[in-house]
Image 1 (cartoon, rainbow, N blue to C red):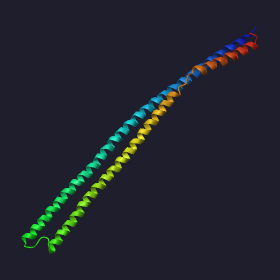
Image 2 (tube, helix red, strand yellow):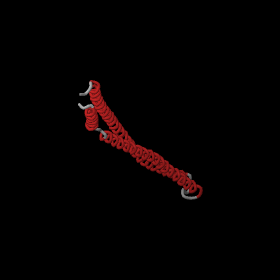
Image 3 (tube, one colour):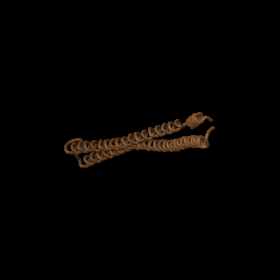
Image 4 (cartoon, rainbow, N blue to C red):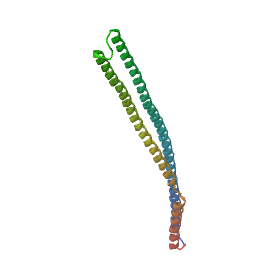
Length: 196
């Protein structure tokens, strides 16, 4: 017949097994809750990153439009400038004609050629400056698109992280069952030793 101490030991062992199983269940539950919270945070971060990427894409498109506009504006300014040079050359020819000289000869010819040469240089400068401005803006657009891609990649990483956290949910059933069975077998072994 078992002694009171042996029975009390079995009771304490049973309570200890129950407490251990409950603690294991709560720890698993807490880890699952933490994983779920972190998964939700990762999904929010993914949303923010996608939003930022969209904003940067819009900004890059706007910059590309500005670069196109710089080229168009440069072409218009070049055309206007060439028209002004033509008007100036016409005025010089008229002045030469009014003075009794022949417009295409002598010093008037030199003035006309000089005006044409400097006018062409200035027109090419206008075109070059417009192209350089567009090139700078296009560089900005390219860098902005690169940044947008980084944010899209971040969004994908956050989404993957969220999915992994949710996939790591663990069930407490098997570990708790294992703890209860282990405790029960230890109690049965102890009970058999005291001839219960």
